[in-house]
Amino acid sequence: METRHSLNVTGNGTSSGGVFKDIKIVGDAQFQGSVDCMSFRCTGTARVSGDLKSTSFGLSGNLDMDGDLDTGKATVNGRLEVGGNVKAQEIKSNGETTIRGHVAGEQIQMEGTFHIKGRCEAETLGIKGMFRIGGLVTADLVHIGMHSRCTAHEIGGERIEVRRAEGTMLKKLIGSFFLPADFYEGTLDAETIEGDDVYVEYTNAKVVRGKHVTLGPGCRIQQVEYTHEFHNEAGSTVAEAIKTGHGLE
Image 1 (cartoon, rainbow, N blue to C red):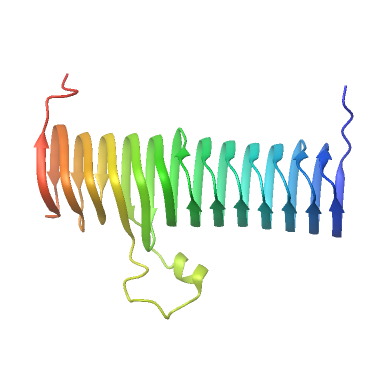
Image 2: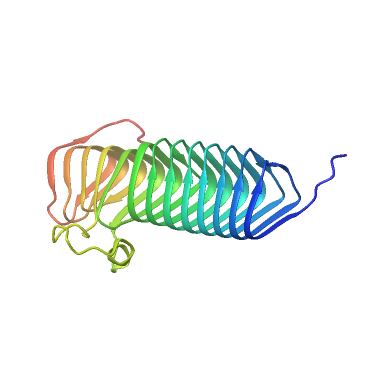
């Protein structure tokens, strides 16, 4: 049976990577290869030139990775950049996150600014902040709170709720006032949004499709397709609304 030893880095440290029990970083650490550990804790700055696999993952600071992140529970407070994919049972992220691959998890809660180049898949997905997601966003329950101008290619789920978030969180994060006056007003651009129960506001989309579809204020939708009910509560712009027979029970 493989023996695992813990690694503690205080100050500056370098490792070639490998298999460990627990990794604890307080300071600055460089891993020149992939890492496999039980728990990974970083308070400070770290770089992994490869993949990172762990049972639990905690970051308070900055982490750059070239490969994939595979963990059970991930808690992020700070800046995380992953060159590959992220897979976790539970993800809680607050700060700035960049994922160049896909994200998959059971429970995902993200707040701050983030960019996911590929897909984002979960059972329950909560997003609050400014984001760009290049692929499909899918979950049983999708709750989105928008700060500033957000984009997602497609959104799918059983219950989907898209709302403009309140507060000045984004302004504090970016710290810049040399931007258009409406920069911090949350909007979403998407190709397609599809679910059983759908509520969207301040959203621009080609197609919104569902059993029960409700539009709040500020929407511009080219086509709404619904099987049961459609409500346009605030007089949003809809080019075409079609009631279809598919899915009627």
